[in-house]
Length: 212
Image 1 (cartoon, rainbow, N blue to C red):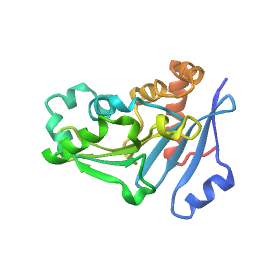
Image 2 (image 1 turned 90 degrees about the horizontal axis):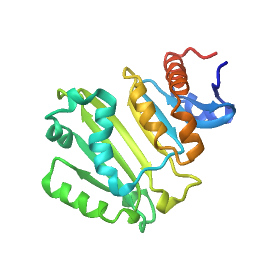
Image 3 (image 1 turned 135 degrees about the vertical axis):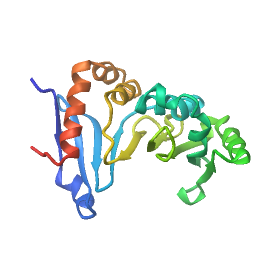
């Protein structure tokens, strides 16, 4: 029996359909577990997740690339990944997105400034990592965003990963994603191999436009 399904409410998808995107809410036995946006060039998966901001650099700059492409392609490519990464963060004390700070991690001074801000994780409300390493042996391009639950609260905080259309979400990532749900019961349920496999198949179908 299939436990994973999707819904595409009209009010949810209409704004995206007008610009070539479709939005789907993924549900596990009727409970929302993720939102999937598929567009002409990019697919994005967001979910009600949380991540420790004081560990963010290690998890996103090292663990996530390894999860996406495997350890072999990451070995000895730390500098290439650093040079390919731009980080945008929003200070919790700033009023709006216009005050967001941007750091190119390949620049030594900007990298130090970035580390300075991340040493005070409770002052960072939101962060985005843009990695453009498709021209390197890593062969990877993605954007990762995270809300800080310590700042915005549990009710609205989300994590999201955007990948190029040609790169499907690997099951290794879905397992990583399952470990970063806010809700402990959902985290437990989504670690099931059956649920992860079913989600991956559903994402592949939606990415190809095979809407039931």
